[in-house]
Structures are given as structure tokens and as C-alpha cells.
Image (cartoon, helix red, strand yellow):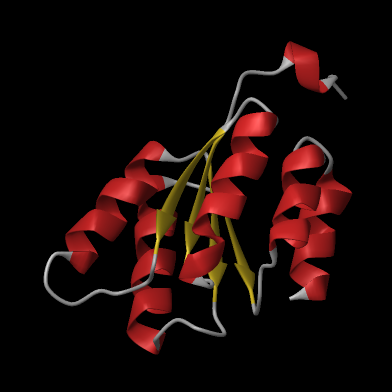
Length: 118
């Protein structure tokens, strides 16, 4: 496996989750040299269009199911699958759990751990 210094910065996407944690998620990604896009999971109005835009600019999408509507989860899954973007469904995603994914993004166990902990 490559060390993090040898890999390009990633653009993570989180759909759903607690919106007050958005700045914490962003800080975690930026401290590690990555970028983050956050979508609250609201698909009414322009929400579906902004979700589609998010999916097309990220390298990995995390969809939080506990606070998202069924429609938002289904739309995120469909868009990610169509765009070929890796996706992880989790029940909850705390800032510490997101930090673990960012820290170990190149290791399969980090993604498996996120799935198991959800």
C-alpha cells in the first residue's frame, strides 16, 4: 500500500448527518490535505440537483441513513452507482468516525470498520 504522502488529495462527500458537525468534518478533511463537500440530505427544491452535483465532484461518498429520508438515501445511492463513485452507507457518522476514515482511506479495513460501526 502507498503511504498517504504518495497519494493525491481526495474529495470526500457526506450526505446527511448532523449539520452542526459540517465544520468539524471539513476541518478534519482539510487538516489531512483533503476536501469535503457536505449535503444535508434535503432533496426538495434544488436539493436533488445539488446532491447530483456533489456526487459528480467527490471521490468517496458517505451516506448517513439515520437522519436522511428514504428518498435522499435512494437518490444518493442511484447517483453514486451511475457515476461509479464508491459509496459507504452508515447509520451514523460522528466526526471521530469520519476522522478514522480520512486517516485510513487507503486501507480497506478503515472503510470496512465504518460500515460495521454504522
